[in-house]
Image (tube, rainbow, N blue to C red; front, side, top):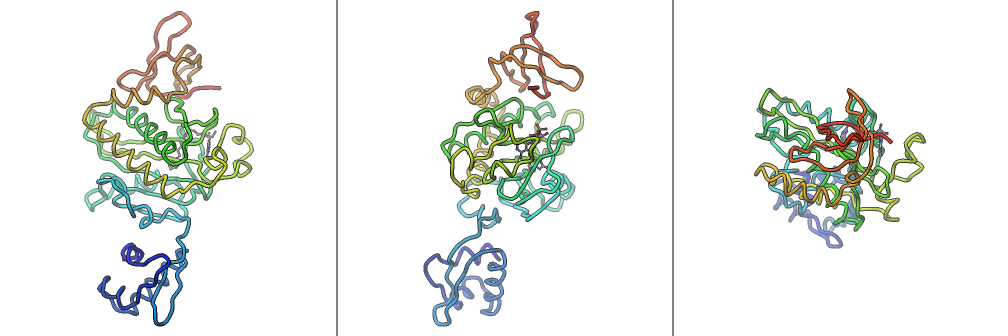
Length: 321
Ligand code: BT5
């Protein structure tokens, strides 16, 4: 209902309460209540007795009705759960997957303005103040669990594309889940799944993008290695537009992945790679391997050429400084 009300309001133009009541199929008192709700959300709306209601400005929030206005995806973002604050959108998304039978469909989005306990990989913390984009997408891929790394890599390509479209900034992908600008982290991806031996039950892809965050807002211990889009571009970035562009790119690449055409995504990934060609040290959780990053294989594993020229295939790990 709120989404419909905002759809029928006009900027710089009055729409009468009567017309709104007719279009929405509700009473004029109910229209007034809808308008109050919108005002509470941060929309500025003026009302004149003989003219009706006029939309003056929209709040700078990632409200579902704002994201869905003009969103051209088929299923990603068709259902959005919005929260001013959450512990973690990934935690909430995982809870939602329990309700699949009740209509939590593929592409459902959980989005929060702030996270009080944002998660990185391996129990690390993810700093998530107001001004960023913190969201999770629920997927039910009919793919084997070995596709999980490929889902992270395709998400990274979608983020790089969306950043480029919305800000003209060229970002780079540090294997497996970081997006960098000028060597500093602007975005992290956390892909989680539940799977049986050969099928995936669900996947939750969490994406955190530092958008309109001032450098001094970051905790001191991570300031040196972080950057926001506002800092990089010198101006505020329209978050709604960035979310919409990302969701469109995400759905596009996910469809390609489902058609088992990962190699074409990998080609693009390589164009944006920060990792290939570098001498790096990777912590695999079991050991630290040093070598030159020479390739990513068709399963999304990093191929390292070790000092003894032997090749190591690493499916997941963290690149050390
Ligand atoms: C990640 O982990 O990069 C995955 C981050 C995923 C965050 C999203 S936000 C929406 C969704 N809901 C969640 O709860 N999480 C996801 P990892 O590679 O482990 O990197 C974590 C490390 O990045 C931390 O240990 C810090 O050093 C650093 N870090 C923390 N917050 C940061 C930020 N806002 N920007 C850049 N770096 C940050």
